[in-house]
View 1 (cartoon, rainbow, N blue to C red):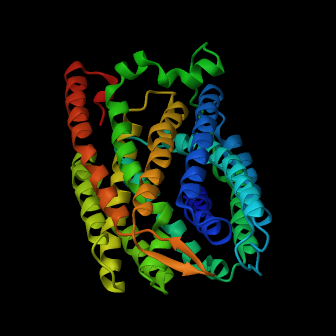
View 2: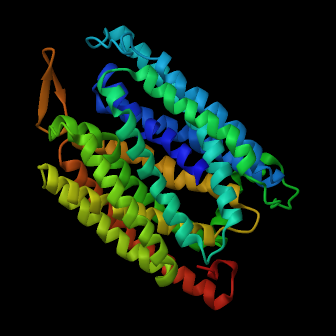
View 3: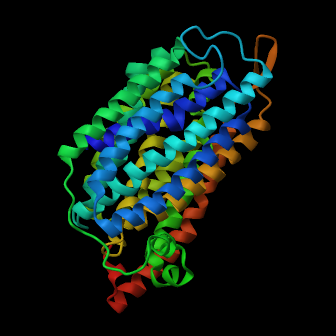
Length: 426
């Protein structure tokens, strides 16, 4: 859990605060944020596919976790030294156009590098190691606990480091998170032990990397791929609003104490998600998914209409609990459907369908909604766009697609049960 938590600290910076950094110091154009998110997701997916296949072939996940986390921390700290002039503690007026463009390009390239390193260490190696180390009987609890790690990561960053971002001290902000991630890499060498699980195959690394993309493999494992399709829908819905949520709270709702609000929400949602994970092992993962997705949708609809601190706190708690429990359910379901010795390869598929696709599609949906938002604010004589409540309505609309995929998955699972196949284990 220490390794998982430290990874989520770094992902919190990449997924949320890096967007705020770009918005505050380089460009307020939502398309810039959407482009950065999309390109980093593509880089992360390619890296995970290759690293996952390599870790399956060698069975050496520990080395990839430890070395990857060390490099991940260094690249995270490097954000403080790249960007627009004045991005440090003495941040001033927005940079000139040429400087802003150069800063955007540099940040996007570094984000792609950091995402590739982090995904290799966390997604291709650590998450595959979790699959190796768990069974269908306890994955609800494990994935329920892992699902709250992003929330706890956000909570720590908001509570301990948000003041640095408000003061414009981005260099120290990125440096602290980078140091923590690097030290976790060193510690993980002593905490993680390889399980000795490796793929017995003569195929080369390239063939193993693209194996999960072959149509014949997709047809032979419908439960796995339909589970990942559900995950993709939940992920797209999340990415419609998540990249812009801090900007929405601060600039649109003008909630000065948004860090406190988010802290309360994350604590409540984390506790509820852990309880949901324990309940999941009792009532079954498909049933929990059927409960969690409507809860997620209800929270999104609530966020689209509330404006004051307390109602926003309640709606956001429902939203985040539903989102993380939905992710925990599909994560546990995908582990159950993972073929033996292919945990790393399946993590590559997860990155493709549950991370890359959502991070390419979702932010651009959000950006399109924001572009049509009539609200704005004026800063230094410039009229700048802000996210509106429509991002939550759009996210809720995306969730409608979960229903047909869930129905198809249930039918495929029944067929696998009847045939006594490997995927019958749910």
